[in-house]
Length: 310
Image 1 (cartoon, rainbow, N blue to C red):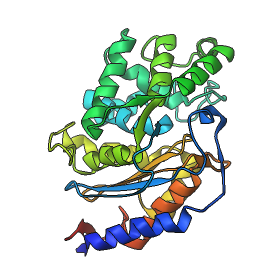
Image 2 (cartoon, helix red, strand yellow):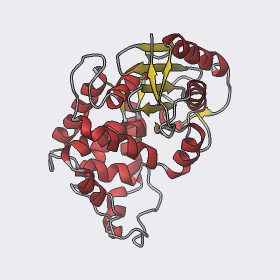
Image 3 (tube, rainbow, N blue to C red):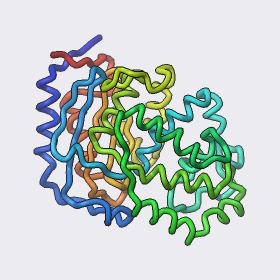
């Protein structure tokens, strides 16, 4: 089955979502990006796999990616490992599905992301590792990245204050590269800045099996695209399960206010609003993306394949 949505319907859905939620006063800017983000900023971008794009509001303002950076990080890892190899590397450091090693203790940033960064090749070369990931971000988005010095400083100072490297060593937490170097790369990666429009282009490239709709160039082997989206649909247990039931769109959110959702073969929606709720979900961004998905019937579990018409 196939269902065709007109481009005017897509435009109306994006504009309608923006108008519906732009005046929301819910949520607050996270302290980690308080010096970087301005309350009230709100932008939405929807990019199709054929390159057509709908922007509304502050879609061109760059903001730190935060955990949204795990999406291009996943592309890198799946380009360097088979899905089976990556699944083995994702097993708990104690080698068991039921963690016994205490590695679920609180951290200033996610342990899974830190381990993922440590697994990126090259090893023992933090600048080279960071370059591999940011080169992929460029290939996916075709955008010059900004950088949040304030967020990077916060994360680095917090990790030092909490003696994270010592904590990891004491717990026997398994990393694939030097802990201090891996943490620095991860802190830098979380601090990379893109706009909602650039993040949506990144997502549309994944939705198009690796072909950047803006440049026509392939950023990665398209056979890995499905695994990237699958990771998005399974990571973040406190957020992703209710979100998937509600929308059916694999997504990634960030405490910085950035959020992205991808529908393979169709495109991606990204939105930015720095105000987050108590669970770290961008209030206006998540509401807008859900509204657009529901209005257009965008759902990976639906029987009909959705395409964008004229």
